[in-house]
Amino acid sequence: MWVGGYPTEQDARAARRAATVEVDKGTYARPATDTLADLAPRWLASRVADGKKGSTIYAYDSDLKLYILPALGARTVGKVTAAHVEALYASLLNGRIAGARAVPDADAAEG
Image 1 (cartoon, rainbow, N blue to C red):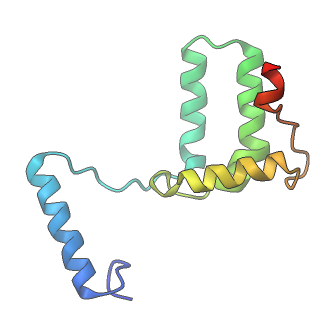
Image 2 (cartoon, rainbow, N blue to C red):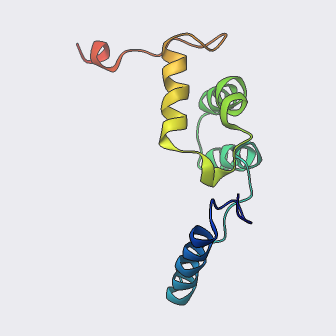
């Protein structure tokens, strides 16, 4: 493994060139070091500030603590992918996470 987590020196150099172009364009964003668990309290506070009902905040907080943060909380925000979220959702639907709430079938709700 090359320094910085790149498989080869060529990959590392290509990443440096791409970052340099982004810096020149003003579009470079420093990689996030905050984990999902770090940001969750701020996100929840922003929902309170948006005027969400207490029951909604309670539900969000419960879902974060019971399901989302145990599964994804240690990941840095930039490393959480759609595949991670889809796997968590599938686990919830299939009851593979202890205590998972039943998630209504979207098709059944329409019918």
